[in-house]
Image 1 (cartoon, helix red, strand yellow):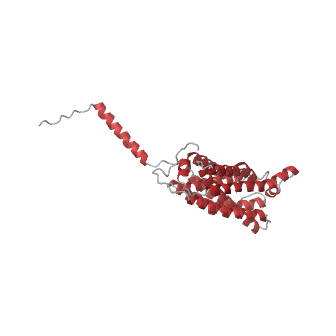
Image 2 (cartoon, rainbow, N blue to C red; image 1 turned 120 degrees about the vertical axis):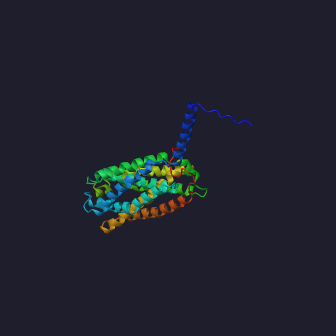
Image 3 (tube, rainbow, N blue to C red; image 1 turned 45 degrees about the vertical axis):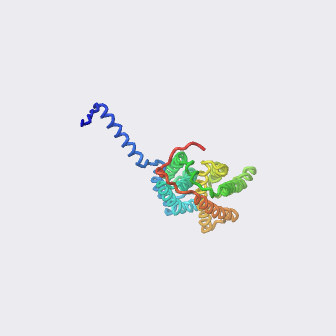
Length: 313
């Protein structure tokens, strides 16, 4: 019986096979190693900056050099930012890093809240020692929001919503929210413009304009309408934007109710109809958000903790 003859491979071929094997092992190692979500990683500086900004605003007396009416509202919002928004940002980011779509949507909503709030602090609040903190926090939150929305797997999120998702309810609620607050804010702005006068809220705040009216009518309310239309059409954008705007609404309305409590304690009169509107919308937005997210199934993909660039719906 003849022994099989083993023909040695040329040195170049052996080297090529070794390199190919090494390359495949490296690819497999890279595939198993979680990629860093750079936008989610911005949560770390955001939490530190938010703790400093909101903590100082709430605990350091005399920090705000604005009109008393405005300063009280700022302190009230700092209380909610410290007690509610900060834990929300931390927990939702942690859940998102573990592949939770619910956590990612709430995280995006919290970022909208931070951008909204610190646009006001950076541009409207009178200059104080925390100015650079406001600017840094605004920058980190803004780019985390842009990057987070640009890379979130919208198609995957839509696919994981069940048939019992309250699409019509969510769409109707977001549209109602937008139209209601357009009516409320315009009811103050339009008569003032026609009469050539300054709105009462601007006079009380001691600011050049009402930044809340600007941000709401130029950004937030149109975003709610876009979310209402796109989720009604069941597009991937709609499912992501609806969860984001609902999460934002819960946090912001809670901050407004906190302002009402602080103003009443300070002896300022409040507009009862507006308080009722905000109270109703807080209850409704929280209920609709819970209902909406309960229809979102957990992701079981191996790369669930990572964002992926997706095509536009």
